Length: 125
Image (cartoon, rainbow, N blue to C red):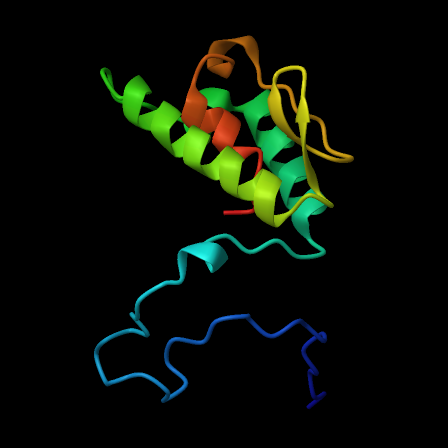
C-alpha cells in the first residue's frame, strides 16, 4: 500500500490548543490593540480571492442588516487608521480612502456603499 506524504504547509500563527492556555479557555487572552491585525506575505492572494468572490457571488459573500451602516463605518474608520499607522508598507491613503498597495480596491456597485465590505478588502480576515 503506497504511503501518502501530505504537502508541506505553513504552520498556523496561533495555536489555541497547544497547551499554553488554561483548559477550555480556547486560548482567550487580552489582546494588545497594537497587534489586533496581522498582515503577512499572503495578503494579496487572500484579497484576490475576496475580489473573485465579490465579483461572482456578492450576495452570498456579504449580507448586512438594516441600520448597521454607522457601526460598519466605525469599524472601517478604526481599521483604516490602524492600518495606515501600523502597516505603511502595504496600506496607503488613496483617492477613495485606505488602499492596499498592489491590490484591486473596487467593490461591485451593489456593495460599494457598505463600509464593512470596504474594510474586508483591507485585511486577510
